[in-house]
Length: 104
Image (cartoon, rainbow, N blue to C red; front, side, top):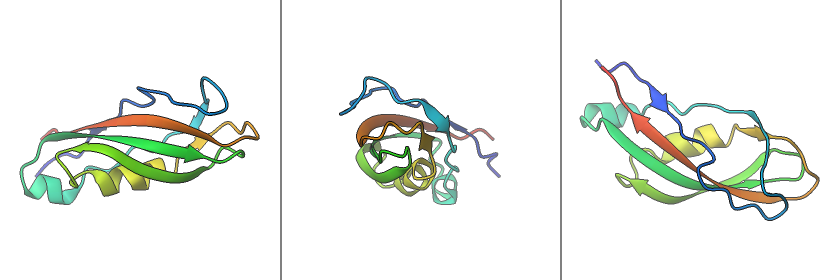
C-alpha cells in the first residue's frame, strides 16, 4: 500500500492583477489520489490558475497544465479551493504548481 504524501511547490509563477505578491494565510495540501496509486503512478504535477477574491478567498481554480493529464486535477482543485490569502480588496490571479510524489 502506498503511503500517501504530497510535496507542493506553491506559488512558483505569480501572475497578479493587483499586487506583485499575495500573502498565503492558509495552505491545504492535496491528497494523493487513490486512482493514481492503483494505476502505479508515482509522480505528477499540476499547474493551476487561482482566482482570488478581494477578501482573500479562492473564487476559482482552472487547470492550466497537468502531467499526466486528468490524474491529479481533482485533488489539486479540491486543495487549492481551500487556500486562503490575505485580502487586498481587489481580485487577483496567481499561478501555482503542485508536485505530487508517492512514497511507499
